[in-house]
Image (tube, rainbow, N blue to C red; front, top):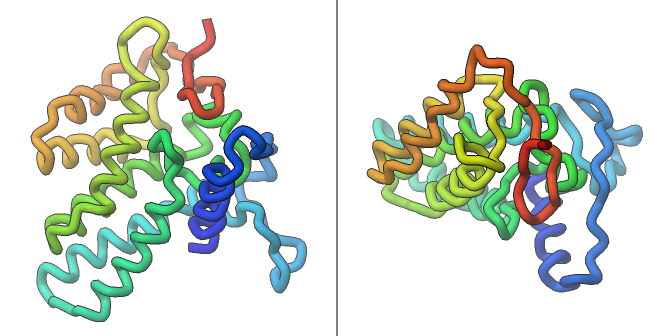
Length: 216
């Protein structure tokens, strides 16, 4: 949750400062990065590159639990956590604290190893489960915004990335999102499967703030 809080702070500063905001340049500090001084970690991203998925798996479990055992205190805790996560979402819908904190210039630059689409998949599974348990749409809407950003980035159309996730969780989650919303664009986006087994570009150099495109 610490990473989400820092990402939310960065989003607020970006909005307040506008064009004077100094965008960070991404530097990979390893598959797992830990603070040199745990007592004073500063405001860098820490954990595994897929650290965001811990929240997503937890909120999915909360959703399933609440369907069988209503618990107002647990639901209140979940709502507070959702507020923190949603505040971390960038204005264009992108939501991965590793890159929001570290620098958007390298988003989707390593689809196999850096797990952005894996984290998206777990976020969406959690959002669907929590919506089905409570009827609350805040996290579901965040997942939809991120899915829309991904749809603008990936696809069969010319100029879009033809890559695919390192894990299939994104495809399964998009089908779940389609089932809940009835929006066919999410079912269409789940056709990442069509790219598997092809010799395709598996990364898309990022243009911070305007989405990502595969190289020529």
